[in-house]
Image (cartoon, rainbow, N blue to C red; front, side, top):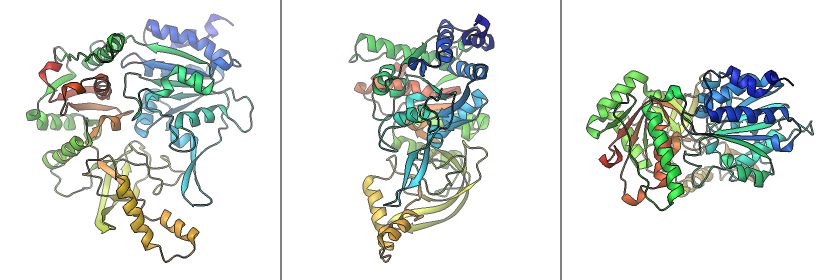
Length: 484
């Protein structure tokens, strides 16, 4: 085969910039990955890269050249917001992992809806998974974890013993790992090798691309990344040194609380509410900011208004047909309220009927839902286990007259109150809730911070927060010691 027919040649030829040394190395590794069809060691490729190292440009170029080697591409991401970002940069439709690999089926004994892995009939297909740092491998949707289910889906075809499929994981190891985890399993080469017995090619991109060199966001993100690396090398117990640089940059600012009203009005006018966000370290602080914005910026007087932006905070499978573009209302989905109709008090909780528009699914029809009011101002992420049980027990009492257990359970399962969506306002969020998303303007609130909390987790939190922004970052109420 001539050099001109190699993936590395075509990738470099189609790359819109002069590639960095890391990108050139990645392109060369693509020769083996795409051309060695039967080598079991060439089924998985992990691309790790920090902010500004050109991951999105690399992926867009890979997608462009795949057809020349007989491959199709399927683009997947962990959340609707991340899939939307992926669709924009790749100019190709991306899906959530859950929508693609699972279907909902009713348990024949309980009637409860459960996730079941779908069959995959794709062959000679490269599955490209963005924001892979968010993917956990705990048994949440079935008996195995999401990563296990995803790999099983990609490499199993009921009609073909050899699918010819491959998978590429793309992500940033400096970001926060899945909630409650120390690392991101989908970006851990050794975990994939040992757990799934797959050979894994990998490349880490570390060099910030030249065209991004004047970005204060990327300069400070890179400094935080270097802090993480140096802190790991020196001592995990050593307090990391954080020194933000704002001077000389027109996209990275520090701001005190006295300026917050002017700052929010500025970004809402410049970018709009959907493209602006405040990120906090606690649910309690997010609630306070949401109340402040609704009262002082938007002048909303009611508890909830048409025009309010909300986020779904718990997966819900009741209100959408499985065939809809979203499939179900997922934890982390953003919506705008179109209509508000009557608050009801039932079972010790407060409910409201809403018409909503899903922000990250632009062609999705409006949805009629019942929502729980109680989570809007709660300082917890969702209803507590005790509250969920209290609601369930109260709903069950209303169906006690149905004698046949199967019919009674079916009626309970379909109850609108039990299936009310749990929501929060979405003007301010915790950083974990923002992962996979991107906004033009991001305010990052330091919050109450003790000296012993300035650790590796805090640096990852900062890095994840400021890299949610594509245009401007505003550091709110940060101590002067954090600046040069």
